[in-house]
Length: 242
Image 1 (cartoon, rainbow, N blue to C red):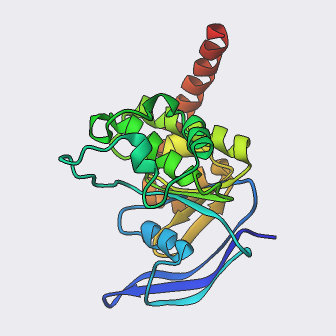
Image 2: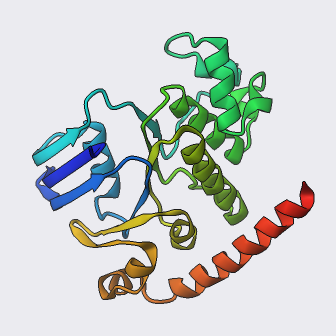
């Protein structure tokens, strides 16, 4: 059974039609990435899937008792508020220590539990937000441009972490991203959105689709090849390190 199915979703916000007749399904265990230009409705589509959008027509169906985890684009934390990572993860309700440890470990943030939230680097902060999403033991993990503000090695490391989470806990992942080269390497399926679904399918298929090139140009293929090359190199490097 699909985890989520979206049928003919249209969303109008403040008189603007943001999404028109969008249909998609998310299956267990897959990593799906939504790409599209600014203002193409990517965040709106995520919010509709999370059940947080008004002004919509169409049907969004979740599998019964679907557990969702959500990593927002950014989260403002009051810098005057002293709060450790462990304490932050225990809001709004206390979490069993074993569950807290497990989520931190899966997110690669186990060393950060006692650190102050305001002292974290961008990458560490994202890993803590990921840990927070994993507390729910999600079947579907949703990330909205979660690597905004990270440099490219930081982004690549974060996506690798997501791929590991998927294999560890067997969840599906739905991401919105503007980092095409990274996405292509990390996704099973890519959906190209521009108010409607322009094209979707395997990354290679989407990268060569005329609709995709019309939106992004064909220059991203170079980045794609370059990323793959770096990625392979990176793996060998890892093996040496063990």
